Length: 191
Length: 80
Image (cartoon, one colour):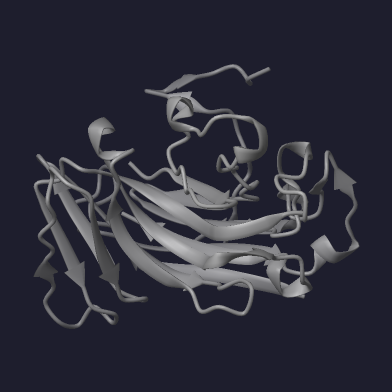
């Protein structure tokens, strides 16, 4: 059920689902998202998965510069794609010692829900269930990381929403080339 | 510098053939955090945050040995 992708984007758009028809026209306006190499380290035992990824802001994607000024980011995020048709979505606070609460999300229009770091997100789809917790997440470019559950106009028609682990987000395109941005962690566990 | 992520928890489902309930799992991934800084570039992507920065994966302390993917018990040939 879990599908981890990393995504960065230059300029204005964050095309998280790689839907080519929705990429902008070519020429100087090219600003499609690129997928950073995940550098994954995964280990699974039965129904429990520990997934670690490490992004490198220095990677020059697709072997060409995306902007004249270099490898500029307006967003660096690791996305966990989740089924929009989940019949129930629960959020359990960090520590797991208190009862969770249902998260109400619309199925017919885009949405954004802030998710506190350290909390556990649980979904029920029919007779199946999935729970995940992001317990290590690095920021990049000096920013603090944050989590959001998002439904996008690009993904909802395909039955997808996403848990977005933002390492960096800015309206100003920014180079993420310092040593501190060369091993950006995203660590998830899922059941 | 090496770094280990580890989690421990009871499985939701009991192990196959077990009548005693869920069994605890301890999963760990050990990575090298600094090997990127000495690596080179291939197609402008750094080589040293790839698999070679992954030091060890363990389940209940035992190293995970990569094997062929199996689907419903049928081994799949390695992909080209």
